[in-house]
Image 1 (tube, rainbow, N blue to C red):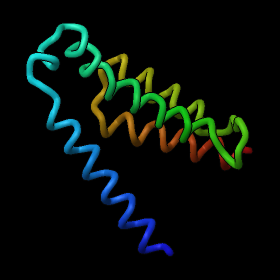
Image 2 (tube, helix red, strand yellow):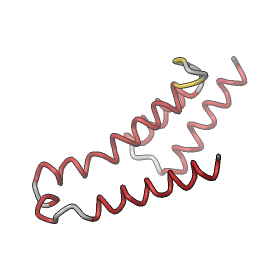
Image 3 (tube, rainbow, N blue to C red):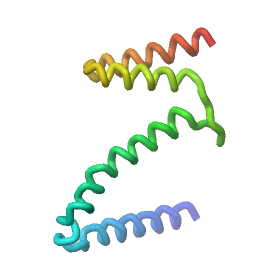
Image 4 (cartoon, rainbow, N blue to C red):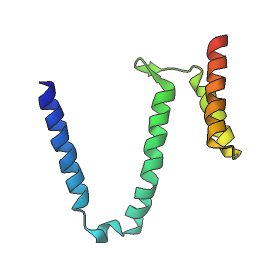
Length: 100
């Protein structure tokens, strides 16, 4: 049964990719479509981050991840290097989990 699900998902992904490749170039050149295509990755990544930070066991969970995300956003806004952002957020989460 598992292999049937894997094969079905594979065929579905292939057909979805084929559908995307069959869209006419004139439709993709439309300004609204182009702007939406530019904004979609940002929206999807934001949704994934929100689910990972606030989700847990089917409920809204506020723990050390939320302040760590806030610190990461602040450091990115201030122009800190990516490694500093990651290490700073991880260190804050670790300290908060140690204290709590």
